[in-house]
Length: 250
Image 1 (cartoon, one colour):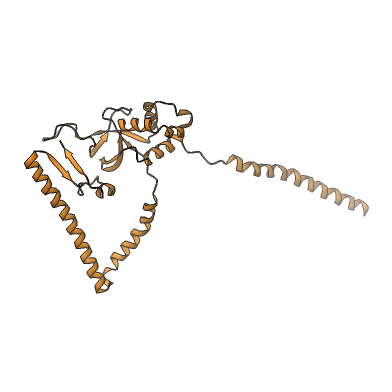
Image 2: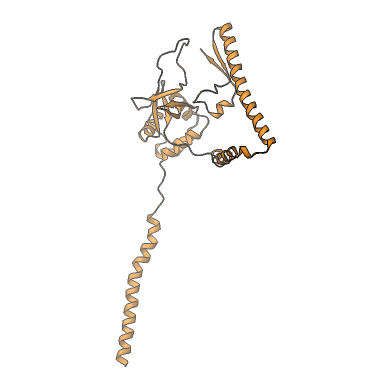
């Protein structure tokens, strides 16, 4: 009986030793696993491009390139922006001292921007020079930075703003409200009818006013002057629609 008890005790101690040996490496590996799975760092040039694009000091416009609306900027404006805002370079880390040409060429290599060229390369009849901001672009054959008539379009999606997030929830509700229009009370139907008629009258009035001013100044001065933005242009943004300005066309 004593021998059997000694054997049982020896067997239990051996099982504990095996458990410790087996549990030791597992616990170490489980502790080391979170350290190995570190979050991938975002490219500094991606962060730089997002920072520059969100900055309102860099003038940019929208245009059509291969049936797609793109936001683009001019090479000379980018050079001026970097000179006036040297703090933006700090995002690049060790590459912050690079020349503007090298920075843009790196952005081109990483497909963050693409060099474009104007579609209409000849002066239209009645004009003395090419447009500073063409409305239609095409991909340039040479993907290198240049300040002389160089246009560069952003190739990544812009971060969604708070207003865009809110509108993404409002539009489905608006569509549902339109579908329920037949069951609206009579007073609501009249209100919607007069509101739509007023908006349509406002748009037509602006178009007629623009045409009248254009015709009068064309007859008197021989120059083409557009008052208010062109609300019929497909590349016009909402910000340009609500901004009233004079546009002189030489």
